Amino acid sequence: MGHPRKPDQARTTLNGLDFMRYVTYGDNGQTVSLNYDYEAIQWMHRNIPGSPVVAEAHSGNPYRSIGNRISMYTGLPSIVGWDWHQRQQRATTPGWLVASRVNDVSLLYNTEDIQLAQELLEKYNVGYVYVGQLETVYYSPAGLYKFDQMAAEGLLEEVYRNRGTSIYQVIR
Image: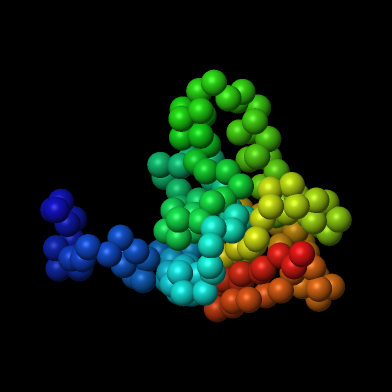
């Protein structure tokens, strides 16, 4: 075990998620409370069977970001993993293939076009759309609002909500 930077505040545990209950994260000049993600991840462990694809925020710098946190801490697949890991581990795969997935995640979250969002959800066989505080940092409010509209139209169902997170199940 490493030496804690602030021994009086350090909590020792073997639970790799435990830090999320206490930590805030800064990105794009905003602060994200990870406790809401922690609660949502716990719910996902208890309530989502199988291995459905989860749409979640993708971040540009994998070593300094919490992008792909839901995939990392649930084991569920996402549309795209960490950009450079994908490129390194699939060296024979054309770079544009990973880049197109990164772009599609941004498009899915930013577009206000419900039809386009549906097409992207279908393209990647997405089962759940995750909208947490990090997604609100990275993506446009109008684009995120579209998921509420899709739920009102019966295309998605909001299956979980806390103060910082909504999870929508794709209705097929």
